[in-house]
Length: 184
Image 1 (tube, rainbow, N blue to C red):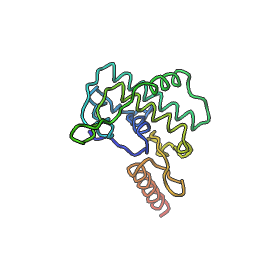
Image 2: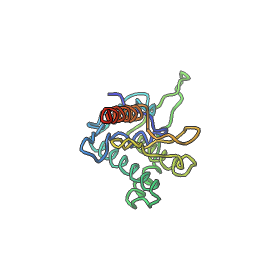
Image 3: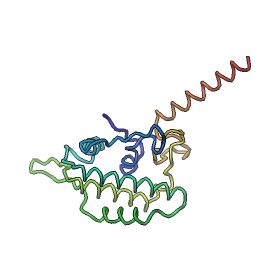
Image 4: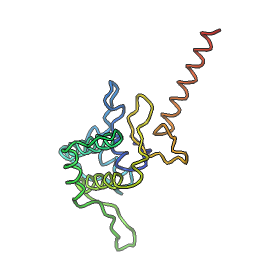
C-alpha cells in the first residue's frame, strides 16, 4: 500500500494514517507493525525497513492520536490534553533519527522505532512553535479528517489534496445536474 503525503509536514502526514477518523468508515492504515516501517520509508525518514514490534506500533498509534488531538486543540484555540503534552515532550526529548555519512561518502538514514517516534514528536513541536501553525487546516471534505498546511498564495486552500477536492467538485456537479433535472 502506498501512503499519502499531502499535509506539508511529516507529523501531520503521520496523523493522517487513519482515514475518515471517527466515522463509520474509519480505516486504520497502520494495521500491523510492518506498516509503520513502510510508512517511515515511504515518508523518506528511513532508507530501509526497521524492526517494529507490536508494542512499538501501539506506542506509535498513541503518539499519532496525541499529535492529532493537539493540533485539533490548537485549531480550536483550546489547550491540549496534559497527557498528550507529557507524551509529546517526553518523546521529543529522546534521540531522533540522524542521517550518518558512510565511508563511501553516501549518507544513510537509519534508526530505531524509538528514534522515529522522537523525530515525529519533535516535528510537531517545531510546527507548533513556528509560523506554519497559523496555516494548518482540516480538510473540508466531510468524510476526510486530514490536517494540512495551506501553502497556497491566497491561503484559501480547502482540501488536503486533489482526491478530496475532485470528489467535492464532482458531487457539486452532480447536485447541479439533479437540480436542473428537477426544474425541467
